[in-house]
Length: 65
Image (cartoon, rainbow, N blue to C red; front, side):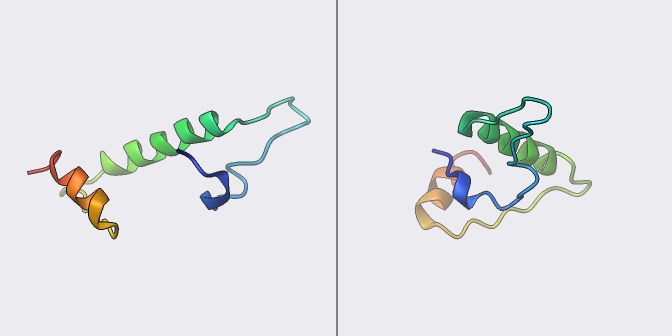
């Protein structure tokens, strides 16, 4: 679930009425997924991710060695 209130890039979530663009929560979720995809695949010596939430950490552990 995507919470627009927790997304803090104000310009990234703004609708653009001049161009007739309105972003739904689903659009913003795809935008955020793309941001993380780019960040996680650009590391020269790997990428380190620290997960604070214990249950999320255990869930993600199954995807990484």
